Amino acid sequence: MMEKRKSAVRGLCCAVFCAATTVSLAPPASSASAPEPRQALKERYHATLNGGIATAANSSITCLKPVANAASCSSVQKGGPGRNSEYDMFYSDVDRDKNTYNSTRAALRMPANSQVKYARLYWGGNLRVGEVKPAKDNGRVLVAEPRGSYRALKADTIRTHRRSDGADAYHASANVTSLVRSSGPGAYTVAQLNVAKGRSTAGAWGGWTLVVAYENKKSPRRHLSVWDGLAATDRHTNGFSLATRPMSFPAGAKGSVGVVGYDGDRGSGGDSISLSANKRKGTPLSNSANPGSDAFNSSITNLGREVPGRVPAHRNTLGYDSDRFDAQKALLSGGNSLLVRFTSGRDDYLLGALYTQVSARR
Image (tube, rainbow, N blue to C red; front, top):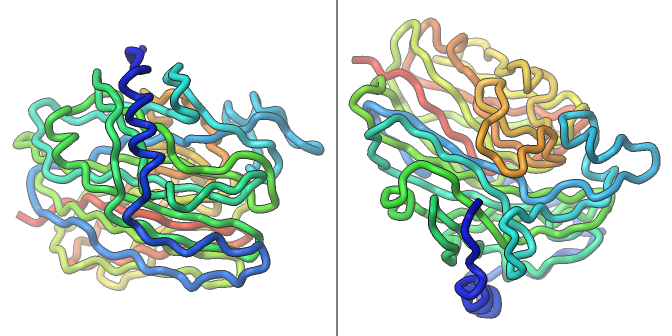
C-alpha cells in the first residue's frame, strides 16, 4: 500500500486547487448548445530507435448503483454489459487519504535498463452529469510516482468538446518526461482528476493514461509516434482518418496501435478502427477484448489482455478506453505510410490520443 501523505497532501491540495489556473477556458455550455466541430489530432512525438512505447492507465469513476433494469455494479465491474448512462456514478478512491476525493493506480512496465526518451500524461472526463464541475480545475491533477508522494501537475494543453446531450468533455495533458525518467517503472497514482459524479443521459466518465517512449538496446528498431487532440465522432458522421508522416517499414513488419478514448459504451456497436499501409484496403484492428464492431467498449487492455497492476481493476470502465491493438496483419506487405481510420455506428466517442510503434527498415 502507498504510504500515508496526509500532511503533505493537505497543503498541496490547497495550493493546487485553490489557486487560479493559467489556462483560459470558456464557461460550460447549456445542455441545448450545439455540438462543437471536430478537433484534429496532431503529432506530439516521433523517433526512430531501438525501443518501444509503454503505458499505464486507469479510470477514475465507476458505478455506485444501477437504475431501472440495468445489471448490478458488481457484474459490470467484472466485465459485464452496462453503460454509464444506466448508473449513478461515483469516484474511485484507493489511496485512503481524506484529502483526495478520487485516486486510482496503475503499473508502468518497461524492459530492464530502458531509457525514457519521452513521457506524457493524459487525463480527462465529463464535467456535466448529476453535478457540474468547474472547468478551471481541468488543467491540474496530483501525481505520485512509485514509492513517492503526491506532487501537483499542471497541463500544458487542454482541449474541450460539448455535445447536445449535455456532455461537457475535456482532455488535458502534460509533459512528464523528467518525472518518469527519474522515477522509472512501477505504480503511478493519479488523484483529483476533474470529473463529475451522478447520472445523466450523457453519462459520467473519466480516466488517465501515461504514455512513455523508451530506448533499449535489446529492443527492435522501431518508428515510435504519439498524436493527441480531441476528435469527436458520432452516429451522424462517417468517421475520420489520421495519416502518419512517411516511415519506411519492411515486409513482415510488426507493430501496434494504441488509443485513448472517452465515452465508448460496451455493446453499442458500429465503432471500429482500421489500419492501411500505402493506401491499401484497411485492415480492421480487433482482438478478444475489443471486437471489430465495438472497438471503443470501455476497456483498458494490451493486445486483447487485461492490463495487470491496476487498482481498481474494473474490466468495464463505463466510458474510458486505453487499448493497444496488434497491427501486424496490416503491415505484412511493408510500405512507407500509414492511415488509421475511425468510424462510429450507434456509439458516440471522443479520441484523445493515438500512438504507434512499427518495425523500421534497417
